[in-house]
Image (cartoon, rainbow, N blue to C red):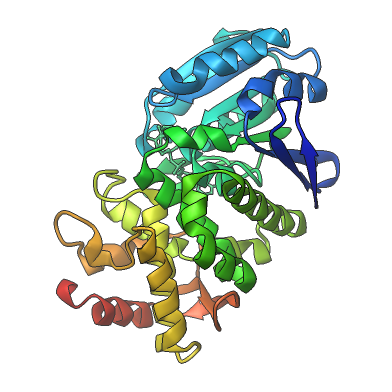
Length: 383
Ligand code: NAD
């Protein structure tokens, strides 16, 4: 993995992060104006392809025409496929609809599925690309901050099951990721903040300097400009390093799940209702809980917990379960969802815990009763 700077034809600075996976290696381009250049960037790497642009009903009216024009300019024939927005689109029903549309468009294995959207569209389209004709080419144009810094990189694709999140899917690496940081300007502040939770995650896993940089620069990142490009590129670099080291999550890639066991359980407990909780907000609460849990186990200072919670709160992210609007969540339901998580083995839970800011580690022997008592103690209104 390496990172390079270049200046595009439009004059905008573009950073290139290379994901080193042997024959499955690819570039992530990060910068402004990349949608307008998408046709030429794709044609340079995947000459002669046709494509389907998969997007959602929120993103389509904002960005589909520009991408379509950029593909036309490069002579890439394409069809648009517009799906409903929201987490519930990551379902078998929508997968079938998408697969049918790809086959109906007579796309071949050498052609490409281009995901223009957030993590939902990226995960679903990547899964479809992975299984149609035993694996079509796949390009990601992530449009949410979360998708730019996390879900578009690394090749995890899939859908949800009524039994839990992301339980059905395949690893299928993209051929190219174009993270156009200008596209984030149409994202709501709430969704931007939710994606920012994943940005903070990289600092908390193993980059304490990055966390400190975020504490000083979060306002500039929210405002846009060079700090935003820098933040996205540094996150992609961090994720690329982890993925290159452990593509299929046999080891350290699990560190990327910091905050996610709690977060997924919370999302599932509110039935993926975005009015109540979106993914990144669940991760923010989950990261705060992971730090409080580590403190309870005597692993970290209370000051570290406060610092993490303060930073998340400074950008408007929730840090407690009782910040979720609507009816109180039942602790038993929550524990049931935690036990359904993919990270359970022989009754013991795998959690990402920490010995300090930027010192996370994989704990494979977490006792469910300890988690239960943490939730009771730290969320007194839920007793
Ligand atoms: P999302 O795709 O639902 O997007 C959030 C909302 O923002 C949607 O309403 C969408 O229509 C809208 N949106 C997206 N881009 C926009 C833009 N530029 N302007 C205006 N609106 C825009 O959700 P998300 O937060 O991007 O991703 C969450 C999903 O990602 C979850 O399903 C999660 O499981 C998955 N995920 C996957 C990985 C992975 O490695 N594959 C990693 C992290 C998260």
